[in-house]
Image 1: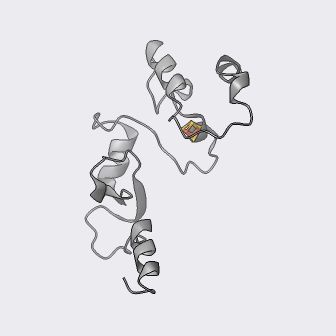
Image 2: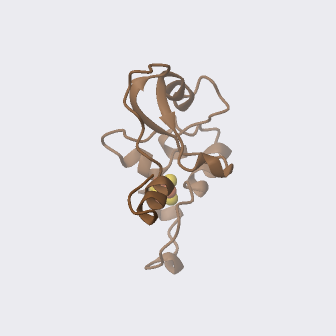
Length: 122
Ligand code: SF4
């Protein structure tokens, strides 16, 4: 793939790295006038590659973006939102937005860890 060839770096082979949100891809796409989350060449590679369409990427500041519409229409949560660092990952779970009968979201990882440290009491 041409875009993979553009970002190939020998020094990165066999080195674990964190997710960069494909910043090089996004920046290059923006420079070409493409829309992240709409145009595949300006969208993270893993979002493009997911055949189940389990991930969506886009501009939360644009109320017409696919991510804004998904969040407006579905219940969702962010991990460790209480830390105040504004995580950009939102997890959508069953139930339309505002539907109190939907299932509860899974407990946050920190809650599970605290419960385990207290011997299973949360
Ligand atoms: S492909 Fe996905 S996980 Fe990998 S750097 Fe890009 S956004 Fe992050």
